[in-house]
Image 1 (cartoon, rainbow, N blue to C red):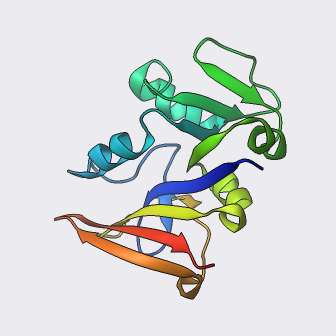
Image 2 (image 1 turned 60 degrees about the vertical axis):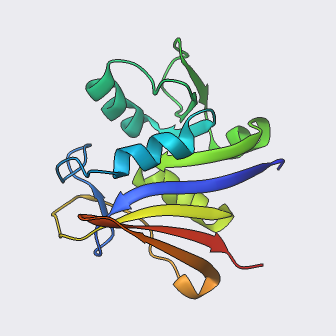
Length: 158
């Protein structure tokens, strides 16, 4: 594997990341800017439901990024690369790969992650998709405060 795997997500303190294939909270000032700044020019890796939610919102894949979707059923489309499984994607994609969801993809990649960029939403919201729980002792942590969330960078301890 010649790449670096980074997970990026917004979540509540109950680890909720989604509801009905969308974000359960209103737009967080600063979160989208962090996401754009970190992922622009890189590969973003997602499951087909996350891709569907991006299409519903933007009507196209994320601009200025290499959009990789893990799916056994989604056909190749302009603007995306489709792999039938995660191992194939991680083997073929180079550089820093940002995993952007959803729940199953996070569950499959958290043990391979070198870094995590997590926006911890300060209010709680109901949801039906969750980020996997993890042991924060295994990570070096940097925190940046925003009005509605804490932006925490986790770097896996060597």
